[in-house]
Length: 205
Image (cartoon, rainbow, N blue to C red; front, side):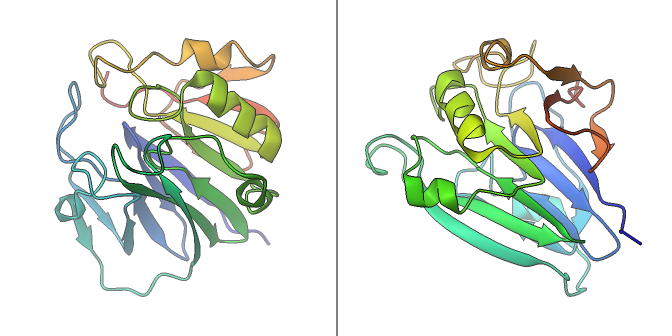
């Protein structure tokens, strides 16, 4: 019997992966315009890089329980100039409860073929799409098409008063795809949606 695994978007690039094997928080933020401060609990916290809108580990109370999870890292950069502008970035590939999930953090450039090869057979790809600080909609769409995940969820974009005013909304990314689902919740059960781009309801609006 497969284990249920839920994905919760807490806003910006912060996601919670929740199963009986582990509770994992990815890229918790300290302060982002339009979002309330986080108060979360987990077994494990992963940060893609050391900027305060992605590394607020103090916002997460750790359980002390060992997380039954495998974590693989692809080293990347926060900008298209090999990190000279904003430093390094990590893509985390998490295997938990039999599912394979990749969180791209603040990826700032197109990926090489060997990196794309490591991002195959994903159940879920969490990818930034807003541009300026990260890849833009066009590059994000190219990566999704190359990786062919079962499900892709965009993050790190502006919506209303939520998000940095320099980044774009999600629409330019969605325009690349024929199959898009706008969910009425900020969370879902992995396996509930397939072969689509899933836009989650902003939890702070």
